[in-house]
Amino acid sequence: MSAVKGTGARSAAAGGAGAKATGSQGATAAQTGRTDAVAAGNAAAAEATAEGAIAGPARPDEHSELVEQANRVFSALADPTRRQVLQLLAEGPPLSASALAGRLPISRQAVVQHLAVLQQSELVGSRRAGREVLFSVRPEALTQTASWMNTLAASWSERLQLLKRMAEAPGRRSDQPSARPADRP
Image (cartoon, rainbow, N blue to C red; front, side, top):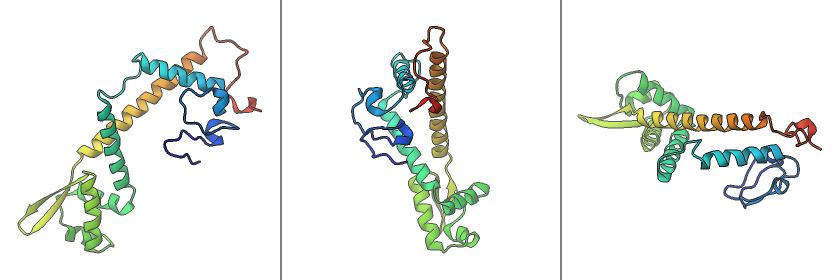
């Protein structure tokens, strides 16, 4: 499933049968191919967010900083060798690039390149000890990314609970279309 970044395009699998690409936020459920239940859920989530029921970051730029940090961390951890380097550094005392290369099936130069990526993502720090540069884990970036992910998960959990409460509300009309896939044409 692919989506064009920034255009609001949705695939048919994500938006329902006959989904159209649209960039407007005021699109109706018929234009995007979403069911009324999904559209109502999105409206309810937007309403809850506007009412402050779902807390967001304190500052808009704080959110973008957290997302950028998470992007750097995920990018660095995407490579299995970098994960292995990070694991070796986490298990013991600070190590030099040469010491790490002795424990890995790659060259010292490759280790140095992986360490540079880990340093750019702020997962690893370095300090000079005589002629050696020793590397060690800096857990702050990983902790911040985990915190951001927990906040994101809690936000989605709150939104889903709100949608559930709306769907189970006593005043809900039974003649509204269902969001079950079996009811779709």
